[in-house]
Image: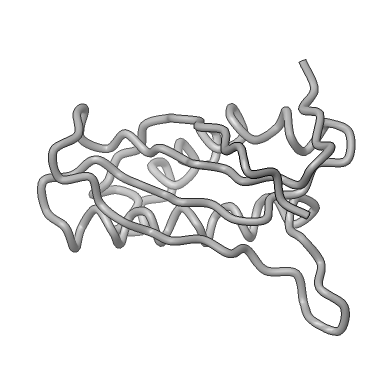
Length: 122
């Protein structure tokens, strides 16, 4: 069961680098994700059921594509946080979108819906 209360986490990425496949930018994005998600991975009974992923960018397509890439990185980097459904491979449920009026450009906001009973570490 998912908690009805969401938790917001933010970090910043190099949008052009992440979308362009730049290894340095991708590694920096992974470090940003580790900075905000490690406490859930190391917490007690934490699984992510759903995430709204928003990237600040004036262009809707670019912001949405960046958010989608962040969702892929979460799924690849944090498989232990994914909810398992019997008979299916664990996968991340998320909605990627752009925040065209948000600043600074490249800031990513994760609106996390975790399971009831999740107690992040720290």
